[in-house]
Amino acid sequence: MMVVSTYIGIYYNVVICIAFYYFFSSMTRVLPWTYCNNPWNTPDCTGVLDVTNSSAESPLNLIQILNQTVKRTSPSEEYWRRYVLKLTDDIGNLGEIRFPLLGCLGVAWVVVFLCLIKGVKSSGKVVYFTATFPYVVLTILFVRGITLEGAVTGIMYYLTPQWDKILDAKVWGDAASQIFYSLGCAWGGLITMASYNKFHNNCYRDSIIISITNCATSVYAGFVIFSILGFMANHLGVDVSKVADHGPGLAFVAYPEALTLLPISPLWSILFFFMLILLGLGTQFCLLETLVTAVVDEVGNEWIIRWKTFVTLGVAILGFLLGIPLTTQAGIYWLLLMDNYAASFSLVVISCIMCVSIMYIYGHRNYFKDIEMMLGFPPPMFFQICWRFISPVIIFFILVFTVIQYRPITYNTYVYPTWAITIGFLMALSSVICIPIYAVYCILSSEGDSLLQRLKNATRPSREWGPALAEHRTGRYAPALSPSTESQLEVQLLNPEKPKSDEAAVAVAITVGSNGSTHSQDSKI
Image 1 (cartoon, helix red, strand yellow):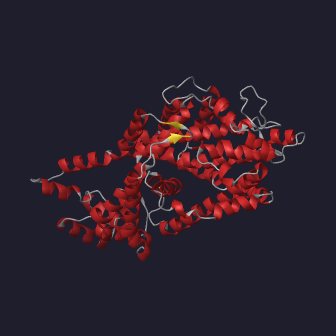
Image 2 (tube, helix red, strand yellow; image 1 turned 90 degrees about the horizontal axis):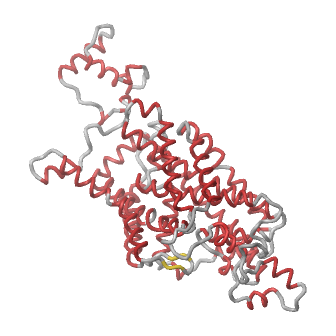
Image 3 (cartoon, one colour; image 1 turned 90 degrees about the vertical axis):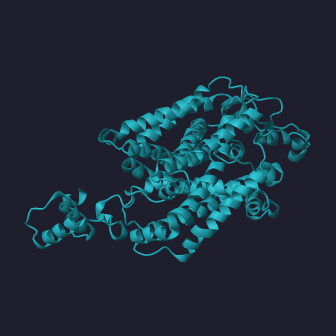
């Protein structure tokens, strides 16, 4: 999970830095990707507003002009490829560093670091804004979008299912990756943030709220996007599918071009990219906190806990340095390579193994008892069935179909070379390979005279397994006491003023703490 979070953290902040670049570029009277009269434009460039103006003087209508322009490229596309990226013709041709993007990358990492300077204490307060304000922007854009001509066409395209895509494994793989991204499954963020919760936090309630809110937000955002795209399709006289795009093409080409058609277009552009920045920062906070918490918890000494801010600073600086190659002229090729291989296939494999390991190695009964101990009630039957059967099966089939229907990555018309795809697979395997390597290590380092005994011991929880705080170690996690300690404990409970041995003191602390009558210093021994 740390390996996956590292990959995502490196390239995800580059996406945020591009959003910062467009955000700053929108602070002008006319958006720079509105017309084709810029030094970076080619003769094939035909802007929507350029065509509209020329069609007023020409007997040809808008659609005829567009049809005659066979090689038409939009000003937003040329702005993206020829000015922002200055894209080279091959992933191996890095070209030069795009210093405007490098500066925005530095801004993005500084913002992330400042928001995490005090860990979850500071990020938790910032998230109240980064998680809620995008809804305000979405609502503003939604109200504006549905009032535009052609918005209904775009929304109907969005709501009409394409049944032929059901058998396409890539669709299911992309859907799984989207859920993993938006919910944070299988890359450590959930575990990290949950570690800061109270032991008896109602995670059942939280999981229901988060899952419903997440999917509802995705649906809501779809209405916002496709209402604008429908308006643009109506303006151009083409089908919505011709203007709809995916990935960076939607965020930095299609949607910005649609924004140029709106009155006071710089205002809508500023709002849109500000929303993208906030959404990206919310994810980046979780990624960075995952890495920092893992390092601090693994080292665990007093110095690193006290100076956690320096660990955060170190991770931020390292992330910035590793992101520099993605700001070169071939950076978008590498960004898409990491996105398609380092953090999609791996997430499916990790989640599948995690389901099987917890349910069938650790044991579903043990897991259900752990949850009941924290929640105060057992998990509902629906969750039990999903965890044991439905989730592993669905994830496994997604994995199988993704492998069967695998297609090499492309970017528009560019086909990635074999060596680049090989690097992609190595990135994907670099996180997955940690699982069997550590499994072999655990088996070899376990006690036992035979391989079978070592295997049995390796698949059992360690002696330290259980609630972190002594006050929560009750029931089957209550520490076993020696007969002499038990007798001392009985005497001490009957005679509280009598001096007690160290072992009995620990037992008293655990008993008192678990009964919930006090949370004194004794309960932290």
